[in-house]
Image (cartoon, rainbow, N blue to C red; front, side, top):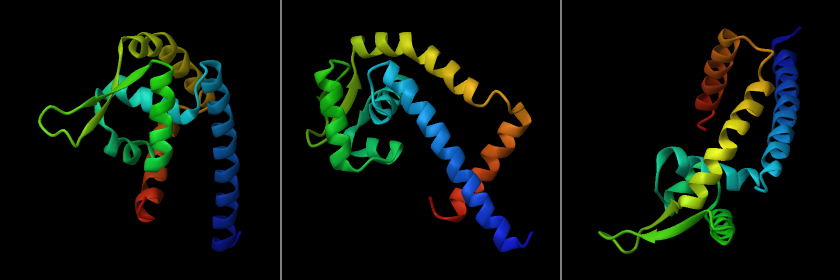
Length: 143
């Protein structure tokens, strides 16, 4: 197969795989009553602690408008709260509250298992290779 044709085939296979993984991930998140964006925010806060709202979008690839909407929804679900920085009142943190922590402690192990099942047909070595290759492609395109 010609090099350019092989690149086109790779693109198609990658897009189909991404679509399948995204669909499975969305179905998993729906079990918990969350969108993938809501889950991503909670997961980040659960594992990394309070984050300035202005920086959350960069970490989980959301625009500021979308992020505000997601944070509002999670606040209404009483899973997180906004907290003003004491040193600089212009900065507002997203902070996972006790209900959010309890929720994530309950659902994250199930989510972790679902993700593992998505990739269980791959060996650890294959997973590590895919991670390296996909990072290399992403970095070459300026992520």
